[in-house]
Length: 638
Image (cartoon, rainbow, N blue to C red; front, side):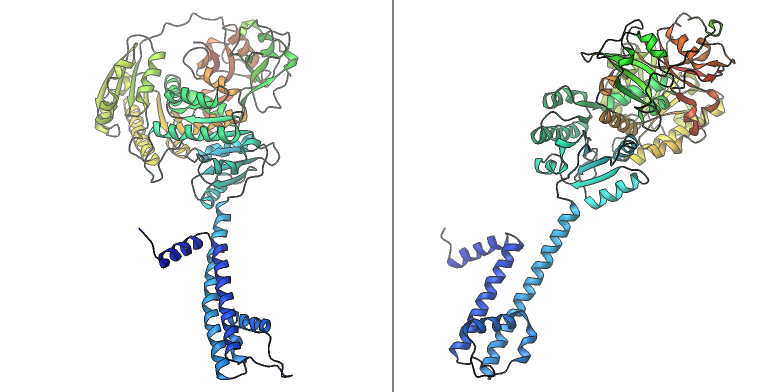
């Protein structure tokens, strides 16, 4: 189909206008030049060239200059002297100039607006070194940046850079509130972490760690399925390897264990991949069977108190692990990472440290993990001989809430209970039917299900709460906002407390909460355990971002096999109601093949200011007095 001259000219004009402000200004300049030249030629053709006071007529160049001044300044026409023909010609160029100047002002206004908008969105490349990069945005961001701020409190000019598909100003305002009073600088860039050009803005190659958050919602606010979130994370990881290569310290959050193998193909074995749902399910089960364990993990994972460190300690070379335990007074020796990178948490107590070994310690800070052990004479009469391990009993567990992670919870629970145990699951019919036969996931547990709403009091009254050894309240996130899911959990929890109070029976209750602020509301005046899902994942991500060696420590610590953290009666270790050094507790634990890391005092279990009674890493030389209700926190294999 042939196109006419007019169509072709219009097409070329459209393409020229689409090139931006520069092309538009150039077009206006050409139009102005044409207008000025036509005006000057008209003055010459009509013979109305004005003369100066000496009778000299203007040259062509001077005529062009005057025409240009009239085009740019409409007020210049009022001072013209000459015949009517000249005046009308000048009026013509002035009117033409009004259109040109108006168009120029509009173009400049739009151009400057676009420039300011671009600056507001932050499209310049970040020039930082040793910063932490966060790719993506989720409700975990507040806890994550707060923990990174605490970790970098003793560093000069600590910085975090956030790249997300959100408005830059909104991100700046949000992070300013989260980091109020903290030293950490936050730099934001608006863009897609899946786009290589946007990743180039955040200086990945000069960063100390790169954190990839799994998205939880779509752009329209609807919930994102786990496999969709993992697809986004995988694409981000691919883009990172293209932009900066695989040598970065990468920490990525995944939602499905099946994705981990694919992610390893992209980033290799050195990257820290944290699969959140199994982790939370495991912590829920562990905490449900041991009251107070949730606070132990919270204290251990945040940067506000003690933390875990992996570091070299040449001073222990040649000494046994047992000797190393007592070589620290205000730190706890947990394990060893040998030269080959193998983790032993803990190693055999008679194993001797070799050159190149690294220690895994709990300490207040990385510079407080020093060999400052003090010899304290112990009285064997204060130590209790190791008792025979109690026979594991069948357990009855009540699970309230049909959570999407219910299948994972059942699998984890089955790994801890003995054969013949029973579990009753109460939740929404549609979700339970979608999950299928839960009994197929267990070998030791008989699983029964009951359809109903866990927030209904009549249903809860019919369950015989006192007949269960523990109760787990799961967050029902399917089709609900985070606030609504937490509200339902708190309603269920209030009913359970009232039922227990009226029946006079005490049953351990562990609840899953999504928002830390809702945890604080639900915990008022009660000693229940809470697992704050988003917060614990954020704490673990921030810990691994600061120390990549902790990846394997957490994998070992939170797995069903091997050594785990337990809270055991103090009466099984030392004489009660007697002043004795904590070193006596440490010695008693070592004789059982365990490592004592702290105590939980019953008198403070309702005091949030005292971490609900949990005290990790007390000085070994510190004198303590324990009662029958107190617990010893140990790393043990059973």
